[in-house]
Image: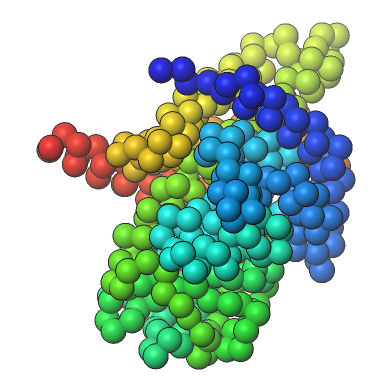
Length: 371
């Protein structure tokens, strides 16, 4: 088995890097960070849609490119490297993947072409505040096709057009598609560590809700959706971690202290080596996850959990150590280290914390060993 991109996939990845290098330099990211009124970079979002990336894995009959999930992983890696300030993950990794896997023919026809065209932004609304959400603690309710309740925090909830909402219906948890531009929806943007990926409180009061998947399958469907998203997020985290290592290395080879480059000192060498090792561990797990996702293999839950854990650890560690290698400069607003540190924390929580994924990995391994 060849755990690497094919030549065509490498070409796609290279072209994505060139494109983002020109359209998404750090100045674009800072433009969103510096302007409280901006929640994402709309011109970049439109340009990404023109490239066809939003529909990379969407079938051609729905306006997509009909490529595989590995190609989408390659794009995700480059988006992570550029810390792109766009709602790509919420829309493509979550909304589009969920509708393709669990939506009806009518739902797919209504949503997927608009996602591919860049006309629709998605969000996943599961959490209702601190703590682990259980079926008995689920307060959001759907009665007669109308949703009521509060979801917080919801990534990209303040800019999304459609949300996938976990709510109780008849005492059983279900997933529902909700038009956030319709009546009965109130949004409140919240402060966060990474304003380039905004979060919101969503309050529903009789909002129209359409079921996604079967009745009573809410929690199982959420986990299935997150398994798929976890692999794609792992590649985004891997791209960010690789860029952190490159930035640290470049600075270490150009910065002098006591008459020699700081990269020649053992302490700096150890930091760079540790970053490289964690990145490579994350890469191997991410590639395994990409295979499982692309082939819809039975190993996907295990592979997704392993990829999620390794990538979260690698990106956080690389972003933190990059700050340290940059020394006193690393803590300043002018240096780009904080852009990656912010995104590393945001991505590590957006689809469940590493602690929850560690519990899932152990659970999946126990099932496998008991079989």
